[in-house]
Image (tube, rainbow, N blue to C red; front, side, top):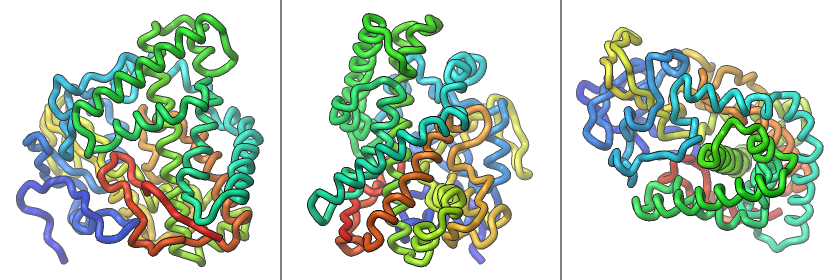
Amino acid sequence: MTEAPSCPVTFPTARRHLFDPPGEVLQWQRQGALHRMTFADGHLGWLLTGHSAARAVLADNRFSNRTELTHPPVPHPLARQENRQLPPGFFLRMDQPEHTRFRRLLTGQFTVRRMRQLEPRIEEITSDRLDAMERGDRPADLVQSFALPIPSLVICELLGVPYGDRAQFQRDSAALLNLDSSAEQMSAALVDLMAYMRDLVLRKRAEPADDLLGGLVAGGELDDEELAGVALLLLIAGHETTANMLALGTFALLRDPAQLALLRDDPEVADNAVEELLRYLTIIHMGPVRTALEDVELDGRLIRAGESVAFSLPAANRDPERFDDPDTLDVTRPATGHLSFGHGIHQCLGQQLARAEMRIAYPALLRRFPGLRLAVPAEEVPMRSHMTIYGVHRLPVTW
């Protein structure tokens, strides 16, 4: 049995297996939920690997999500405090009551009922992409031909962002999420995206529209900078996360034909399969981070005020105390309780939209192309190991 680390560890990122968290973080998890960790800027804080403890911290308002209080778990081009300013309206990194002010304006837009109403349009978009794939060349890159366009089209229509502008915002959002980008590249991408969003807000003011951003503009509760920041957050989160789940999930299924066949052949499996893929793959793999606002005792350890806690959500979602046989992909598993969408007040606002897109897109792809297979050896698929959201850069497939 591997002993719990006796000295501070660093956040593990190196994977020996494509779909599994780093081996050492799973080994440490078996020894406890909390481990002393040295952050990338030298801060001495904690690494959290256990499911129950992670859920507790995410729901505890004694822990802050504010950017200026947290420390980067891995080297980051914008690690210096003066480079870490986020736009007004980027409520993901706010605490209450500021967070509540923005969140309440949006909650009604992402209810289960609203997402059910969107499903016919999601089905139409998915079918269109499959038609285009069928007409196109083989091999095809599943990322560019299927996984990225579906959530991008949906969030663009929902927000009121012209899909024809996708090359710009996809390029800039990729630069923001790539830890290999320089601080200058990240800052330039953020400036570029905010300028685009400000211009879009002005267009909505001049020509009112029946879309989410148009509704926020008409509501009059946010100023232009806040509107641009909210739109930026929703646009990036709305296409990057689901696009990577669609591509990485397909990759995992192609490597496990028995599980693929279950999802393809049984319509009743889709809901569980989506939850299981979210749990098993956990694409948010470098955080989140919370900072204690006061001394907090957790799992028999004292987290002092000012200490940051970095989460390994992939490890928490493989916790054997919460999930039986956690390292096995089982699309029939009722995988409720995973933390892939977070927990507490910051739980992903768009989770029902993401679920709807995956529930529709995975079976449609597998049924349209029953002979779908990788066009290159699995080890040649380029992984997003240095991106804040895990996945694949490209997925060459044929059928």
